[in-house]
Length: 136
Ligand code: THU
Image (tube, rainbow, N blue to C red; front, side, top):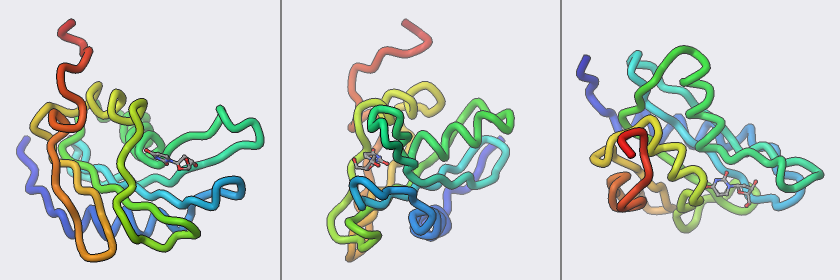
């Protein structure tokens, strides 16, 4: 099924999700919104832990919510972040999140990185070239 990617809906979803960030250690709030194959938008925030390594990033929270509802493909993602939830520069996704995106998204999947004046658009393939995937 084809889904029209509405960047503005994803961007608003990421911004709203960021408000729920649990970030008492870094104070860096992150939000993400994913368009999944069922046509729904799944959102997520970062969830930190006193044992820092147990922290989950916003992107993975959103993607795992979609996958746990039965989705196996994602078509776009929007991400925002900022200290205490104030968006300035883009919050570029970490390597682990890029790898998780590549498990469920194609190379041409749009990735919208939000900043204070709008957003920058990349493809997943630009952010994670030469990736290790199911095809390997
Ligand atoms: N963080 C994310 O949520 N996504 C990323 O891709 C990078 C980092 C979170 C993890 C941690 O709670 C905070 O940002 C500071 O690293």
